Image (tube, rainbow, N blue to C red; front, side):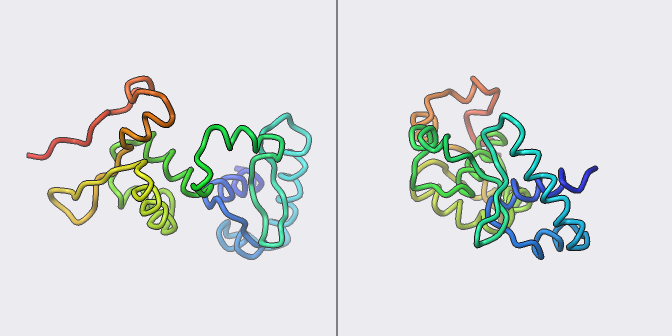
Length: 164
């Protein structure tokens, strides 16, 4: 696997700007190789017809939506949700129902705050696992209403698993 592809995955999963050092540590590669791979990745995105771009910000390197698509974001996604919360919500929607522990493994510890935000805004619901200490998470009726689709349209389970 190319290092540039690995960096792309890291930037996507983390959903926040990362310094060169953080990227090198996460990828387990020397800083100079990561710098070269980042340039390759940035060049690749600059020359493709894509909604995404890799940019360097004062906070670090970021995979983000191009500015020309911001109006679409405003129309489709509630502005009160951070990019990380949006990605956490997408993971919950695609894997619904999902154990909170599995979601944290998938999205990282920042997902704890995303879960709280999504619960507060009514986009997800949770229920304590019968045997265990985690919670089952799934999208709520508000999610389906807001995004105007049925769970069955995506082949998703519409309900949490039944407990004995």
